[in-house]
Amino acid sequence: MGMAKKPHKVKLIAGILYNDMPAMLKAVSALKKMFGPTDLESEPVDFNHTDYYADEMGAGLKRIFVSFRRPVSLKNIQRVKTRTNRIERVMSRNGKRSVNIDPGYLDLSKLVLFSTKDYSHRIHLGDGIFAEVTLFYKDSAFNAWPWTYPDYRTPVYAGIFDSVRRLYREGR
Image (tube, rainbow, N blue to C red; front, side, top):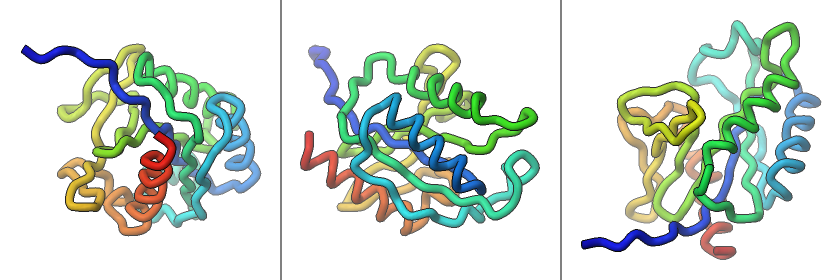
């Protein structure tokens, strides 16, 4: 019989989708107030894999990723998404988001993203928040699942997550 163990702390990350630089900077500032200092803030990457957000957020979207220095416990981890949703609501204009914050976490074996949408590959964590393993780490690289979003399959994102994983491994 297996014995339950306390899980390792994980590396909190957030992807921020935006087309308004001041709004993105304001969101990063709010995230730092909530979760502490960052140890990585990526360069902006063009978001051109879908037009899903165009009606709400406009054209020319970009995404940056941030990772937070302090490892976090998995206990009540779904609260991260409820808190980032609050930032999105506060920063909305005329009922439309100025930023879309996609939080999640990374450990040595995977990247997990949070969502408010259920689907066959997602597990409910609590408070209406679901989690999915978006990427898994094998053979010294992040690998996609059939459900992995197209942008998360790109070498650019893989490079960012490799850097975050290295920071996690060194600071764990």
